[in-house]
Picture 1 (cartoon, rainbow, N blue to C red):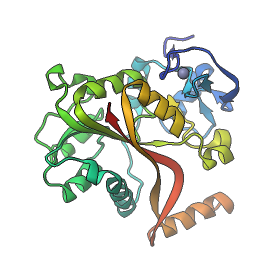
Picture 2: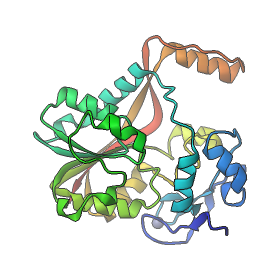
Picture 3: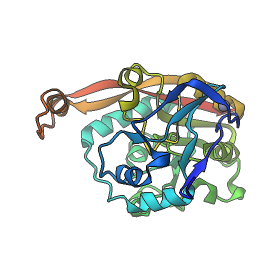
Picture 4: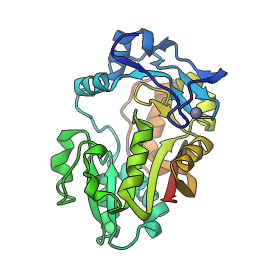
Amino acid sequence: MESYYVRRTCPSCGSSSYLRNDSVEPKFDASVNYDLAKEKFIGFSEENIFFTYVRCECGFLYAKNYFSLEELINLYGSMPDNVHSGDYESERRTKIHYLNFINRHIPSGAKIIEIGADNGAFAEEIMNQRSDVEFTFVEPNLDMHKILKKYSKNKIYTDLSDIPKVSYNAYDFVIGVHVFDHIVNISEVIKNIFNLLNNNGKLFGVVHDESSILASILGKRWPAFCLQHPQLYNHRSLNNFLSKNDFKQVFIQPTKNFFPFFYLLGHAARVILKKKNDLKGGWQIPLNLGNFCFLYEKD
Ligand SMILES: [Zn+2]
């Protein structure tokens, strides 16, 4: 296998044996189509290409072959700047919806780490309601750091492992919205989060649900089966994984995403009538896309 790939074992239990009849196979497997994989990764291909997902005997779904860390850095570096195509009000409504799940669980004066803080939109929403909390951001995209500085005086890190060990047991809350399906060395990262949290510290995340109805209807065309996701979770596999790492469940709940009505109409017209359009705006409609959020407490 070429050097831009690595072989992985199950991030949850370490095993390399998997169930032979429960894999998700793309039309083109990325581990044998490097050039196409690169085009797809940076957004210049519409082909159905990702790394075959296998299901470990423990139930965890992960890509057995994946990009090496060096190659991932190279690929993220070749990506054109993030174009925020989303609707501002919809993103805001979705974030308030997430906050409603956790607000009462965030202790007063909480020290919070947000991993993959992006442009700070979720932190801003939290601070609108909670002026007592303080953020430390982890964000690999350096372009976002100057924006994030608006929300916190604390040092901004590009990687969680850069937070010094003297900060172990110093944080009350860790947040990661749509980040835990992206992290290759997820097992290390969860252990690190455990160390950074204090005794009653909590971990909140939002991820895709690979056992959702949408995923089973769309099969290999489900958008979350993609090159950017080295693993995907369902309620049970996530719970097994976090329990093994000494976290105990507070809740797992399905989440909704908000979209403007005319955007949805335009999207339907593109899919059904194959007609291009630029419809947007309208009432905010909550949709269940088979995502879920979870809150765990250090055990
Ligand atoms: Zn496993």
